[in-house]
Amino acid sequence: MATSTLSITSARKERMERFVRKFRNNTKAMIGLTIVVLLVLVAIFAPVIAPYEIDTTSVEDRSEAPSVAHPFGTDDLGRDIFSRVVMGSRISLYVGFGAISAALLVGTVIGVVSGYYGGMVDELLMRLMDAAMSFPPILLALTLMVVLGPDLNNVILALAFVYTPYIARVGRSATLSETNEAYVESAIARGESSGRIIFSEVLPNTTAPLLVQGSLNIAFAMLAEASLSFLGLGAQPPTPSWGLMIDTGRGFMQSAPWMIIFPGLAIAITVIGFNMLGDGLRDILDPKVDAIE
Amino acid sequence: MYNYLVRRLGFMLLTLLFVTVITFAVTNILPGDVALLILGPNATDQSIQALQAQLGLDKPLYVQYIDWVLGLLQGDMGTSLRFDEPVAQLIGEKLGRSLLLATAATAIAVFFALPLGVVAAVKQNELPDLFASMFGFIGISIPIFLWGLVFILVFAVWLGLFPTGGYVPPSEDPIGTLTHLVLPASAMGFALTAYIMRMTRSSMLEVLSEEYIKLARAKGMTQRVVVLKHALQNAIIPVITVVAFQFSYAFGGVVVLEEVFFWPGIGRLTLTAIQSRDIPLLQGCIIVVALIYMLSNLTADLLYGYFDPRIRYGGDD
Image: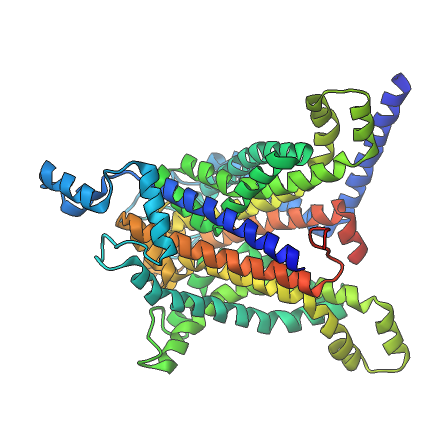
C-alpha cells in the first residue's frame, strides 16, 4: 500500500514538473500569466496606486486631456481617469473570477454527474444545457439582468448561469474519457462507492480541461461584464467599471476621446492576458493540439 | 447520416421546448404589473381587472404559457404593449436588417481571414505568422462595442469617411444603405476575422504536412500552385464550418453592435422592449434570435459532419 501511494505521488510530481517545464517554454502562456499577475497586483494595491479619490469631482478640471497631473486625462465630471481605470481592475477581476468560480462549481457537478451516471440523467441534464446554450450568451445575460436588476453581484449571478453549460460540457466529456480508464474500472471492481470514485479518481483528472475552459471563460465573462455595463444593465454609476466608463465617454467622443481610449485599452490588455494564458494552457495540456502545431 | 439528422432535429425540438419554457419563465418574473403599466397609475381597479382578463393575465401561468406557445406555432406572438402592433410584424420589419448586418460582417471576416490564415501557415513561426497571431488575440479580446466606437472615432469622426450611425432603407437609397453598413459590419467582422484566421491557419498547417503535398512539391510544382490549388482546397473544409459558427456569433452580438451604431434591427428592438418592459415584444425577440442562433449552429454542425467522413454519427448508421 505504502509503495503504491509513493509511486502515485512521484508520478504526480513528475507530471507537475513536466507541466511547469512546458509552461516555461510556452511564450503565449508566459506572456498571459505575466499580464494576469500584474493585473492582480494592480487590483490588490489599487488604492495605493491611484493618485486621486475616484469619486472626487472638480468643475475646473473637467474633460482635461492627458497630462503629468492626470496621465489618462479627466472625465466629464473632472474625475481622474487613471485612478478610475486602476480601481476598475478590481471590478473586472471580481466579476470574472466570481462568475467563473460559481460556474466551475455548478458546471463541474453537472458535468461529472452527467458523464458518470449516463442514461436518462445525462440526457435530461444535457438537453437543459443545450437549451441554455441556444441563447446567444449576451442576450441571455441581458435578459437575466433585466429580471435580477442592475447590480454588480447580479452580473456575477447572470454570467455564472450563462457559462455553467460550457463548463458542464467540458466536465462531462472529461469524465466520460476518465470512466473508461482502467483505474476507474478497477475502483468499481474493488467495490468503492460512486462518491468516492468521483472525488478521488475522476475529479482530479478532469482538472486540466476545466482549467483551460475556465481561464478562457474568465476572458469572456470580463468582456460580457463590460458589454452589460455599457448597455446600462450592469454596474451602475459611479462604479468605475470599464464598460460603464466607455458608455459615459461615448457622449464626449469628439471632445474627450481619452474617456473611451484608456478604459478600452484596460479591457483589451486584461482580456488578451487571460486569452493568451488559456490558449497557452490548451497547447500545453491538450496532446492533440501538440500534434498539429 | 439520415438517422443522425432525424435525431438531431428531435433534439432540437426538445431543446426548443426548453427554450420557450426558459423565455416564458424569465420574462414572467419581470417586476411590474403589465396591466398597470399600460393603463398608468391613475387606472381604477375595475379597468385593471378588465384589461387583465382581456390579455389573459388572470389565467393560471401554465395556461398562459400554453396559449403563448400555441400562438407561436401559428406565427402569432401577441401584441406589443409599447407600439400597439403585432409583435410578429415588428420583428419582421427589423429582422432583415440584422441578418444583413451579420451576413456582411461574416463576409468581411472571410475576406480578410482566408489570406491572413494562409500566409500565417506558409510562413509558420516567421514574422507574418507572429503578426497574424497577435492580430488574432487583439481581435478576440476587444469587445464588439469598443471596436465599434474605435471605428466611429477614426473613420467617421476623424476622417469623416462614413456616417457615425443610423440606417437608410435600400429601397430609398441603396448606396446610403452600403455606406451606413460599412462601419458596423467591419467592426463585427474584425472580431470574427480572428477566429476564422486561426482555423484557416491550423487547417492549412495540417494539410501542408500531408504526403500528397510533399509529392506535389517533389514533382516540382511551384509554391503558389501547391498552396493555393492543392492545400487550400482541402484546408477550406473545416473553415467553412467555423464560418457558419461565426455567423451565429455575429447574429448573437447584434444587440450590442446595433446599440453602438443606432442600427434599427432586432437587437435595438430587444433593448427597446427591455426599457419599456414590453413583455410580449421581449419574448418574441428572444425566441426569434435564439431560433436563428440555433439554426445556424445546427447548420455548422451538419456541415462539419458532411465534410468530415471521420465523424460517425450515432453509431447505428
